[in-house]
Length: 215
Image 1 (cartoon, rainbow, N blue to C red):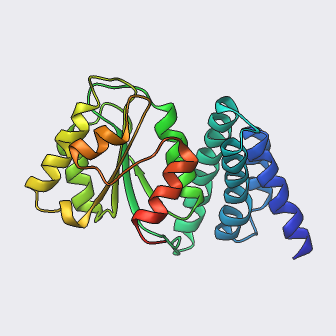
Image 2: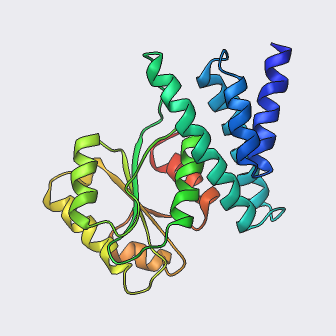
């Protein structure tokens, strides 16, 4: 176990260092170790440390983005191993996340998705320029606990309200929480469109998600 503890620490440090090559090499070397443990005690530990440091002002956005990119690559590798073993990751809830229609900004949304994965959520990332109906369709299919809407463009944040209206039209708004985020998004705007919370950065989004879903 001591050997594994050291291994997990090295994986975590690769995330903190934004070193994707080292992380993937370590994952390859750890093929005989439980991938669920690597995910939680290695990748998860690293991205949570970066999130804490970002919240405390010890690191900045480039480091957060780099660590999220390493986390995303590592999760893809481990998810394949987990599926091959016939097992599944325990999840605190399924989150559908995406950048709203008309906006192609990806970085902030991807960082939030990685942080949510590291904290035990099952994330379905729809990518960028996502149509309102697609958010609703996937939320229904996946039985999502929450929909996360992102935009960095002032005009496009109005599409967040359209998503919420379509969730109402589909009859699932009461079953699905909605969290919104992006530079132009304010609490006043979120209240106006009927969102449940605003995530002001990745760490805040995770904290708000835990509150919304009762964790």
